[in-house]
Image 1 (cartoon, one colour):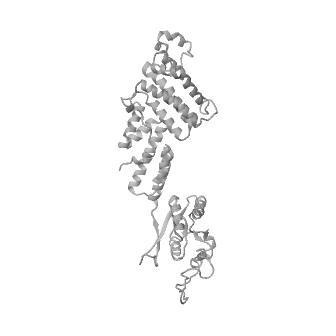
Image 2 (cartoon, rainbow, N blue to C red):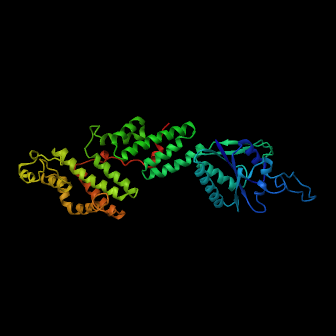
Image 3 (cartoon, rainbow, N blue to C red):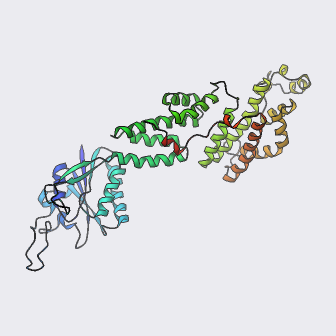
Length: 428
């Protein structure tokens, strides 16, 4: 595999030469300062620019031995190296901009087909910090640092060798912050994608276990968020654990898998899903879910309490006083009704939720108009944040009042899905 070596260059040429000899790169990028006092001249400057060039202030005797430039010592051809020149090697912004551009160029050209090694031994602290940071956040890059025996606290005198630096735990922790941001917006799919990249790296056992667990949890809540309740229930059942227990019970109630169901869990689930979409500024999606929630509430009420399927109303299920009026609605032997007609029938059957709808009918139908004009319904007008706020206040308000009439206790409500607190669910 082709090896590309990136080196920060300071006053000493020895660690640079040692690193190149160790890695035998196919191409080397020297990151150096330019100008009269810069480190650029040690790369390919004329004469003998390397070594300790200082002189005794008293007798002017050279303190060290001058040596040829690095390219001469290693016999590097011009096509084997390049220089990234910094005007101010202590300017963090300049260092980051130029090195970031270099990393993007290398990654784009090589497309993951080469080994990239970033050695941050030489240069100013700012140069080293920048190279190390970019080395950590670039998945395909290895970190390297020259080490050697120290006789004092000043520096390694000689014999330093480049060694690999384990960056993956740091990389994972940094990426987990990105996961946290995704989860804050209920983006379980996006969080899982980031975790997938982390899980491919060699992590210490505890962190690896946490990443694998979080991937499974994100998959479960992503399925729930997409109304794939059985898939989500299967995944959460496999994971278990106290933090997930409340959600697993809620899922079982939505799926009708336990006896304590009141039957309106899917309506609650739609309302909570609507709020998640609004939090992502997807207001058309949010209003569409609210519309479905209020529609489903009437359908469940008719079926659960009256035994009437609003998609196929049977005349024999209706009181005799209503039979003739609804018989006229028959088409191909079926009586199908829409939202307002469902609530109208509930009102005629003296149902308290139907009566509540009748009291608020004009306000509710006005709110529904915004949904009808939405591009996700029958129109082309996008829903704004203000539109959602008004529709939500009307439709969610009606649903809450309806639940009070049923009644449904607070302990029977479905919980909102977890956001960034999901990161704390893992238990070793």
